[in-house]
Amino acid sequence: MMQFCGINSNIMKQILQIEELFQFLATELKYPKRQRNKRIQGTVKVSFFILEDGSVANIHVVESPNEDFSDEAIRVVKRMPKWKPGIVDQKIEPYEMVLPISFKLQEY
Image 1 (cartoon, helix red, strand yellow):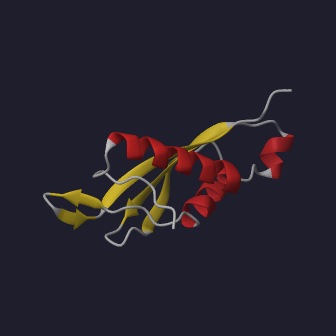
Image 2 (cartoon, one colour; image 1 turned 90 degrees about the horizontal axis):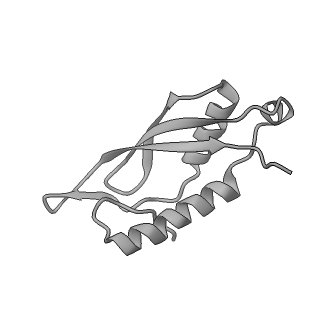
C-alpha cells in the first residue's frame, strides 16, 4: 500500500513520498471540461485531517477559483491512499494538511 509522508519521516523518504503524491495527483486529477473549454486555470487549496489510522477526514476547500475545480479537488483527496499518521511526543496524533492542487492547461 502506498503511503504518503507524515511529519515523522526522514527527509529522503519525504521527498520520495511527495513524488508519489504528485504522481497520484497527476494520474487521478481530471480537468473539468467546462473550465478546459473556457481555458480557465487556477489553484484550489484543500484542507483535511490525517487521522490516527492514516485516513483522510474533514475535507474542505480553503480557497478556489470556482466550484468545478473545488469539486474535482475534493473528489481526488477522497480517493487518496492512507497517509502515515503524525507522531508528536511519541504519540500518534491527527494533524491538518493544506494541499494546493493546481489546474494548469498545457501550452502547445
